[in-house]
Image (cartoon, rainbow, N blue to C red; front, side, top):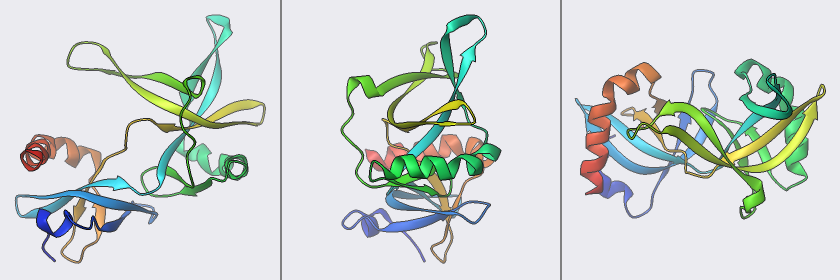
Amino acid sequence: MTFSDSDFVQDRPTIAVKDEAGRTLMCQVEKTFAIAGRHYALLLPLDTPVEIFAWEPDDSDDDTDTLIDVEESDIDELLPTARAVLAEHDLTLQRSAVTLSVSGEIPEPHEEDCFTLDIGDIDADGEPDTEEFQTLATFFHEEIEYTICTPMDPLLLFAEVSSEGDAQMIPPEEFERLRPEIESSIFDVLE
């Protein structure tokens, strides 16, 4: 199966991305491109990506808590409670490939539900790289408070598409190796 941009512009087909664990995430194909004879696609998940963060007391300040990433190994233990809390908001939490996701209508963001997180990287201007999130729900598990939130910016994914039409996520080390060519292909397509 060969892809070209003209195949996708009109009807924006969907494709299932699989991860190493065999989980899938349905995505809309935004762009396709080839690098060294291999086919790749820029994808946008159909369901809303979410993340779960834990609140941890700040050792230097008793009145302040810090949001920390939840370890992948702890997600399965938190899923039943997280699913129940999101169900109260008519959202269905899924353990999909690449990211947790929810189906259902996400409420309009309000200022009090949004926050900015320093993600530890430094951008091209030497400023801390940040990401904005909208809080969807909070819950407690074993006396720890957790926040379920969605990024305010869309999550774009890059996957390799086989000749059979199967999509596999590009491993991080391969993505970094291909990054200049991917960016060049994407910007050439967008111009």
